Length: 374
Ligand code: SF4
Image (tube, helix red, strand yellow):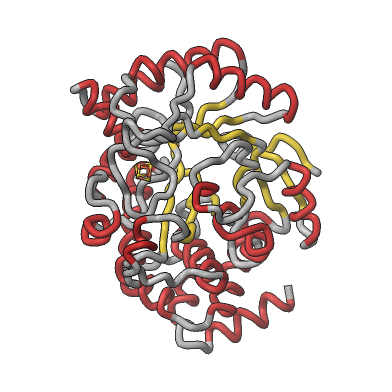
């Protein structure tokens, strides 16, 4: 506690001290403060404050979920420039998993690895109707207690367009067939100038927020994400953080926030050569710290992004405000398409990584309820 007090004193005397003092007195930050935090070069100071806030909430505990990820199809007609995963319809390398295949993978991993959640995400495949998802979810629920965390807002939008239905109706039907919660993918940066550059065919910022609002109103919780490090500037990053905060004030539907860095390898953006690739370890730690500060008292959980940043950085992120390691992500194919690194971990590796830094690993379920202490 003495060290926390020392760090607090040092920060309060720094150029962001006024913001920190307000946060410590329970005030939330606004856009201008968020921009100042992101522009601050005092990453260690930001980390000290974020860690102090994290300690207040979770002490030395860090959670994770034992899960499988199913990227059910790589067929996509949205052609995001930052994506190395998709293949256009008719391409020789396309695939779509059948219901039987999905069920087999889900049940096998639950039996052999003890997974408790399946994360389902894929491309915008124009040949997959709503019945495909309903029958998959229904089959999973009839044969297991696995939680289904699936389909980002842009996938929901695609299904609605195929069905000539509303996104609200699609969400309601998916919920009825077993969908438990939504991942926050597809947000990238919630700024339409950025989207026009990196994903011009994807849903706009307001549509992402509207579909999340609809999901929350239907009782479907979700996570929120931010993919940073492409063409955006600090103000656009801050606006993204604030837009999610505004919706959370209204719905309280976001369970977690997950900032991750753009991985350019094998993407159209890399081949165009015009990216401002500004990610890396220091930026990850800063984004984690700013997120904890911005969402303190608002969004409970902050994930450490091991998938795009690696195990070592994810450990460090736990000292910069993150409280959750995310999932084991057995079967991940989207980030692995960039060739970045191994994109799955066993639960033992996560448990060891958390223990290595002196924290207590907690296995959680889809809704962040603690299942087991290690
Ligand atoms: S990020 Fe998603 S929507 Fe965009 S091209 Fe890749 S698979 Fe398609």
